[in-house]
Image 1 (tube, rainbow, N blue to C red):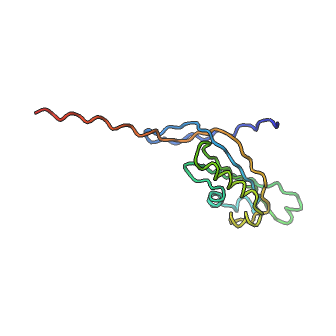
Image 2: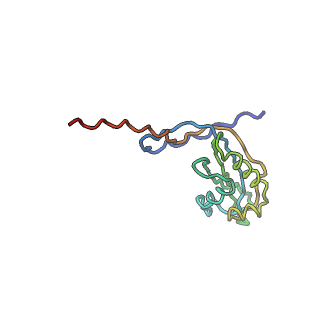
Length: 162
């Protein structure tokens, strides 16, 4: 088997949390799909792209967290001369391992990875030149802010004696 991949960079610390909300390490399954977009990395709005990937990967909060990262493709001299920049987009859906949506997320990712560049381009509203047919599926843990169960109601004080 291939050596394990290096751990991802640690998550940024959570901003101050409301009372009662705690951060717990939870088991997740991460599905990463990769597409190549025929556009310069600076011309792609990552927020819009994430909004397009979300339904394609069936990844909706709070069960599933979506992370999209963009990397410029190293250009050959010939490509630079043609001024055809390309960007690789990695979209990772991180879903609770014991969550209700795991199978829907898994199915959606494999369906998306099986789509053509044209189909993916229509879904993402981007000029997609290539869809990686492989889905990177792996188990992991990640911190999630979770609310504990609500406390039980305090006992009612006895009425004041007159």
